[in-house]
Length: 574
Image 1: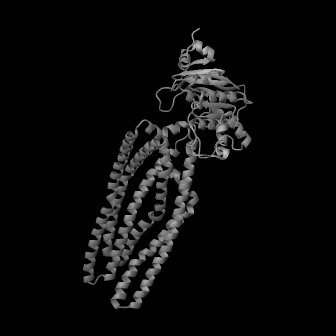
Image 2 (image 1 turned 30 degrees about the vertical axis):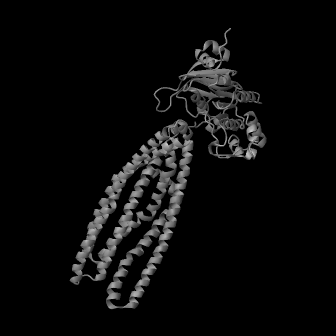
């Protein structure tokens, strides 16, 4: 939590004024029992209506001033809590954006969403309540005890005994519940993860008639969360009855001893009433304090989880002497490159070496899980090679500034992702200052021009979340246009034409090849036809390059490529 408190610094004034006005309000509240005692002892005892009205006016004044102070304190507390949580949310989001794919894979999407939403909301609530009540409740409790001593020392010793006992109860329950709330949040992560999977994969679930199984899986996770919440809830629920028992026992003793002293003429009836009111104030404040401690416990558990994410550093760090790199005849070079993912037992890539020259087309083919996507992800340094080195324009990718390196690359990932907004806004992700002419040119090369022209509004036609109002092939072509509009020197098409028919796929590759200043193009595909005419074809099997060469040479010398090719095309006998 300490590392997060620095984001409270802009709200130092609010953090001081909020509790200050709450203490002023509490101070007025402590005088109320004394005013009531004076009404009983002097006004009612003497039948003095004027005195009674005067004291009632004083009570009203104390109430109005106290309310004004309370509203002021709430304003400053809310301003600090909301401002702190907003700043924390921005910082956390920026930090998550800085993490590499490795950390994203390790932490999990559902975990990060929980940190950004419910955890920060819980921290916000905890900060607000802390500023309002953390100082007020103890102040009223001990203030009431001090005021009780001014009324009657002997009776006030009851307060001195009860308050430590109540403190033991409250802090014992807090110590027991804090780790349990962390467990509850972890189970909440699990529920959110299953929810995320089900909502993103709802079509697959229905296609395979797995609705009932997924409902059962969700119910099991929800039941585990419910059990944890009920268990910690039972422990937290002990706080109110235990505090009530202690306070009510003290009230009984107080009234009994007070009655005896009134009969003996030691105490007045108003004094006993004042002591009872102070005991009632202590009861109310301790209940508030108990609920506050539960909220603080939850907030601290959530803050710790946020802090854990903030402490995760990206495994991909920029060099202090980062370079910008210059165009070179060698576009990309791999030298004995290996990659082992974090937590993986076996390497995903082993001893990969090849050279791609400027303007060449490199085809990458292999079976599922052979390491095709892993290989191209190393070029943009989305993962770091664990062995060997990757060079772009003759410079090790680790020596580049990340934004400079990735600005050279146009990346089209396997899953076509579009964002809500207009088509123009989506294409401008590639180049924010692109003109309409540049956008239409990129759409034409990506074979998406007709798609946009047939939409009402054309470039201003709206894209729904995830591009759900476009077909799979249309989404792929639009994402290719988004990459092309920036005119990258290296273009990576990671199985990004899988939803295109053979004619459109061929037209796309031809348009890219014939483009002025054609980029060095990496085509990852399961189709032999898509990479058949590449300058080099890299054949992967279990992370190893079992063949590198042209289509003709691989057919003769690479059994793996031969098997893939003839599984898709009829073998013609000589």
